[in-house]
Length: 177
View (tube, rainbow, N blue to C red):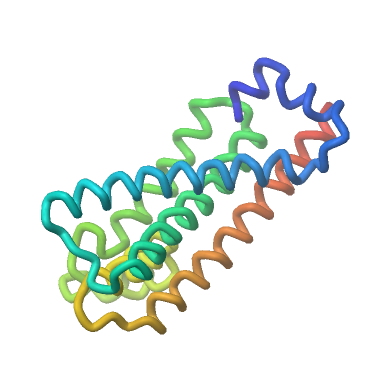
């Protein structure tokens, strides 16, 4: 987004009859599809190496959907920050300031039982944790479909909020032109 802002691409898009929110939404969706493709490649390599998704094809769909939603959620944050700051260094610093703690306050790196109680509490509101829970549920035997779908719904809500933030930031950017 910042490269497009610097090169004047966004201003040229504003001269077209495209709906303004589509400019932001397309970037968020592109990011999600890119994560799905990467997830598919990783799942395929894992399958070739002997890993199996116990929930079969439906499990693959859940994992790829979780990848799409987590990436889209962070794309909304990233694009909103890019539109507000218009500086790559600032956007990267703020994104890392948000993203890294969310990774560490999830069960991606540590079992929930080993986390301090405050981390367990914080993980409940973490979009990264939602993606992990929904993906793990379909990987392991005895899939709890209600937990998998519930966490995907949480991710949809988080994605809507972050996309709304990016859309608001785009409106703020347009007012400065």
